[in-house]
Length: 554
Image (cartoon, one colour):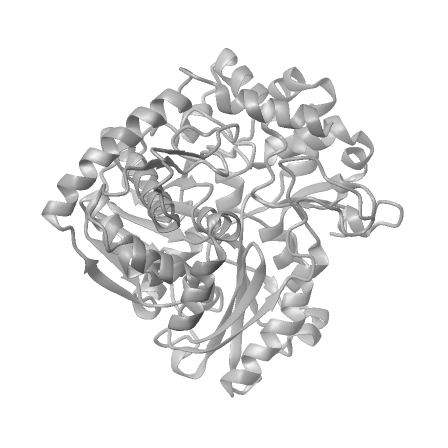
């Protein structure tokens, strides 16, 4: 084995809007330097950049070359900022949003880069929050229930429109020429590793959670044919590929990728991973009962368990999906930070921005400070955190946001607090569902940008009535990727051991306040009534309104 003290590793975290490269000392996880590159095309959710053509509602696309540019720009910038000798870097790997798939040719060329296909939206990357395949997801779920498919309970009884099958079926039915031309329907998490090492290796995490790979098998050709005769053979012909376990070496850095990054040719490139799951060892949240929440634009909840259970509305459970030897459970909330950002952008008067600037703080922090001057419940509001649909436990992108209780006296900071609270209530709904299903949550560990909001973290502790531990790193996913790179490079025998050496966490950074717990219980009861009324079929007004919106744009 290589001596960790003389070795460095690099983790690259591909987020929704940017990619971040982090240089890490493999001996103890010390973060030496990082660099960020913003995707030039960001998210194409209204307009296709290549043509200026409008996109329908619920679309979210990206340009794959933006990801390559992260390797060309952020990695060398981070290495330069660290001051290390690049020859001492022994491994690199990446993590990605998911499910974020793209159609490619046999050599990995994205279809949007094939001449003549630049104007075809379905030739591009479908970002995780592309929800335009909800109708296909509804058919997948209905058929799976009708046929009694054994894999459906492993996903909480629902397959999401965010995942590989619904997006691929939408592609087939709306642009069959692109579907026929593609050789592989590949996760961006695996495509970027392919760019680094020249090998297509399908990572076990996305294959299990997003690709319905359970017990070594995908849904049957008969199931696919029942969805659409032309879809028969999808898994066998366009999805299935060699599976790489997390922390394994996918290959060596190619000469081309070495030129992009400035790193030594041939160093270890680890199997790809998902941004949430890769963070667990970085936050030392790998034991059963430790639920890790990566809180940013959305929240992904992951947790290891020592037994297999069916949790309604979970995103999935995969053997070894987070760490070998455990069942990895996943749940999530489709909108968290995105909701706060939407509110500030569209619902907050200019005077709040002026006040924040005068105080030398952000408008988000200013609203938070104002909001928490009041007692719990003083705003008279309760909200549903469904502005981007509901991932868990209802698994329904047809749902939308609500704030109840507004009057002519309601102030902007009160609405803001109601939205903050709604995301905590959504997290509590997930935790209580896991508890009721025999997978108890005993500690809530937070990573991601939102942990900087101390009022928000204390509120989560009070709403959940659980201690909140926080990762002692601002770059959890990138650190997690670096940990996996260290294992692939032979520095540690397992991801768990590497995480113990390189990960970092502050235990019980926030503890529940009994008085606040009781006050939030009352608000949560109101949230639950609204949640079940609008989310479980009593009133489908949200879906009817979305249908009207689609008709108006058709």
